[in-house]
Image (cartoon, rainbow, N blue to C red; front, top):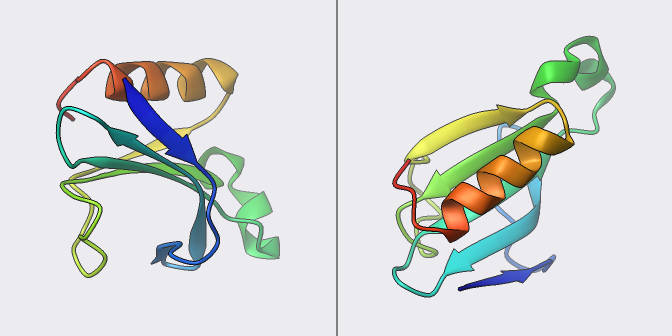
Length: 90
Protein backbone atom coordinates (compact mmCIF):
# COMPACT_ATOMS: atom_id res chain seq x y z
CA UNK A 1 0.00 0.00 0.00
CA UNK A 2 1.16 3.57 -0.58
CA UNK A 3 0.04 7.12 0.06
CA UNK A 4 -0.10 9.39 -2.95
CA UNK A 5 -0.68 13.10 -2.95
CA UNK A 6 -0.01 16.42 -4.61
CA UNK A 7 1.16 19.12 -2.25
CA UNK A 8 2.71 22.48 -3.17
CA UNK A 9 4.19 23.38 0.22
CA UNK A 10 7.07 20.91 0.35
CA UNK A 11 7.91 20.32 -3.29
CA UNK A 12 11.52 19.41 -3.94
CA UNK A 13 13.30 21.55 -6.52
CA UNK A 14 15.79 19.41 -8.44
CA UNK A 15 17.75 21.43 -10.98
CA UNK A 16 14.75 23.59 -11.89
CA UNK A 17 12.23 20.72 -11.86
CA UNK A 18 9.53 20.63 -9.21
CA UNK A 19 7.74 17.59 -7.91
CA UNK A 20 4.09 17.47 -8.84
CA UNK A 21 3.40 14.00 -7.50
CA UNK A 22 4.77 12.28 -4.41
CA UNK A 23 4.19 8.69 -3.40
CA UNK A 24 5.17 7.24 -0.03
CA UNK A 25 5.32 3.54 0.78
CA UNK A 26 3.73 2.29 3.97
CA UNK A 27 6.44 -0.35 4.53
CA UNK A 28 9.36 2.11 4.74
CA UNK A 29 10.09 5.80 4.56
CA UNK A 30 11.07 5.96 0.88
CA UNK A 31 9.54 8.58 -1.39
CA UNK A 32 8.93 8.56 -5.14
CA UNK A 33 8.90 12.09 -6.46
CA UNK A 34 7.80 12.72 -10.06
CA UNK A 35 9.13 15.99 -11.43
CA UNK A 36 8.00 17.92 -14.49
CA UNK A 37 10.23 20.43 -16.28
CA UNK A 38 8.02 22.94 -18.06
CA UNK A 39 10.78 25.38 -18.96
CA UNK A 40 11.17 26.32 -22.60
CA UNK A 41 14.57 24.63 -22.77
CA UNK A 42 13.09 21.31 -21.70
CA UNK A 43 11.08 20.96 -24.89
CA UNK A 44 14.25 20.40 -26.92
CA UNK A 45 14.84 17.17 -25.03
CA UNK A 46 11.40 15.60 -24.63
CA UNK A 47 12.82 12.41 -23.08
CA UNK A 48 14.06 14.35 -20.05
CA UNK A 49 10.99 16.48 -19.32
CA UNK A 50 9.52 14.07 -16.76
CA UNK A 51 11.90 12.75 -14.13
CA UNK A 52 11.18 10.23 -11.37
CA UNK A 53 13.42 10.25 -8.31
CA UNK A 54 13.46 7.83 -5.40
CA UNK A 55 14.60 9.25 -2.07
CA UNK A 56 15.63 7.11 0.88
CA UNK A 57 13.27 9.08 3.11
CA UNK A 58 10.73 11.86 2.94
CA UNK A 59 13.07 14.02 5.01
CA UNK A 60 15.92 13.78 2.50
CA UNK A 61 15.41 17.26 1.07
CA UNK A 62 19.13 18.07 1.11
CA UNK A 63 20.29 14.72 -0.25
CA UNK A 64 20.76 13.36 -3.72
CA UNK A 65 18.13 10.92 -4.99
CA UNK A 66 18.79 7.23 -4.46
CA UNK A 67 17.73 6.63 -8.07
CA UNK A 68 16.71 8.80 -11.02
CA UNK A 69 14.70 7.64 -14.04
CA UNK A 70 13.21 9.46 -17.02
CA UNK A 71 9.62 8.87 -18.08
CA UNK A 72 8.96 8.91 -21.82
CA UNK A 73 5.40 7.59 -21.99
CA UNK A 74 2.44 6.43 -19.94
CA UNK A 75 3.78 2.87 -19.80
CA UNK A 76 7.00 4.10 -18.14
CA UNK A 77 4.96 6.12 -15.66
CA UNK A 78 2.72 3.18 -14.77
CA UNK A 79 5.67 0.78 -14.45
CA UNK A 80 7.69 3.07 -12.18
CA UNK A 81 4.72 3.70 -9.88
CA UNK A 82 3.81 -0.01 -9.87
CA UNK A 83 7.37 -1.10 -9.07
CA UNK A 84 7.76 1.47 -6.30
CA UNK A 85 4.43 0.69 -4.62
CA UNK A 86 5.17 -3.04 -4.76
CA UNK A 87 8.47 -2.63 -2.94
CA UNK A 88 11.04 -2.75 -5.73
CA UNK A 89 14.35 -1.39 -4.41
CA UNK A 90 15.70 1.05 -6.98
